[in-house]
Amino acid sequence: MTSDPLYRLLAWLSPAYPVGAFSYSHGIETAVEEGFVTDRDSLVAWLESVLERGTGLVDAALFAVAWRAVDGAADGTDWAAFDAVAERAAAWRGTAEMALESRQQGGSFLSITRTAWPHPALDMAHARTGGEIALPVAVALATAAHGIALEPALGGYLHAFTANLISAAVRTVPLGQTDGQRALAALESAVLRTVEAALAAASLDEIGTATPLLDWCSLRHETQYTRLFRS
Image (tube, rainbow, N blue to C red; front, top):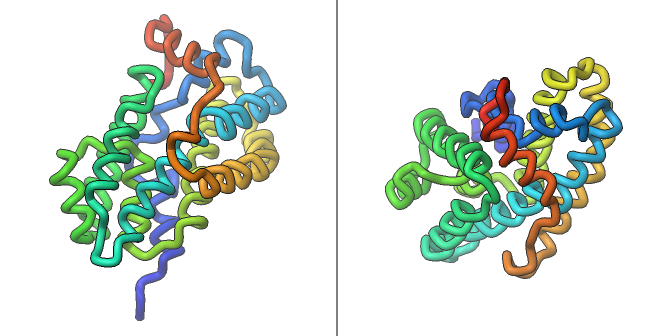
C-alpha cells in the first residue's frame, strides 16, 4: 500500500488535530461584543472580508510561497526561500494576539506532525526555526514534503480556517449548528476566490490587507473584560 495524500490532508486539517485552534476566535469574540456580527448574514459578510481582503489572503499567499520553496527546488527544499517566507510570516500580523494565534498553532502543528508523520524536511524546518513557525507555513511545509498538491492543500487549509471561525461564532453569537453549516456553504465561493488570488500572485509584494476593523477588534480583545477565546 502507498500513502494516501487525502487521508493525511484530512487528518491534519481536522478540528480534532490537537493544535489548539478551538481556543482562538481571530477577533470574532469582540466583533460579536461590539455588534458587528449578530447573525448568519453578518457573519458571512465579516468572513468574506477576512478571507478575501484580510488574513485569509495573506495566509494563502504565504502558504503558496512556502509550498513552492519546499517542492520546487530540483535538488530538494530551497531553504533560503523557505527561511525568507517563514520570517515574513512571523512578522506579518497586525496584533500581538494574531501573532500568538498563528505562532502557537504552527508550532504545535509542526511538533505533532513530526511525531506522527515524520519527514526529514519537518526536522530541518524545526531546527531552522526553533519550532517558532506560523501556521500557514507549517502546513504548507508538511503538505509539500508529503507530496500533497498545492491547490487542494491550500483549499483545505482555507476551509479549515473558515470552519474554525464559524465554530467560534456558533459558540459566541450564538448561532445554531444549522446556521453554522449554512454560513460555511455560503463562503465556498470566497474560499475558492482566495485560493485563485493567492496562486495568481506573482510575489508576496502584491499581497496586502484592507481590514482595519479586524485589527481593531483584535486590539480590543486584548483588554476585553470577559472572554472565552485567546484571540
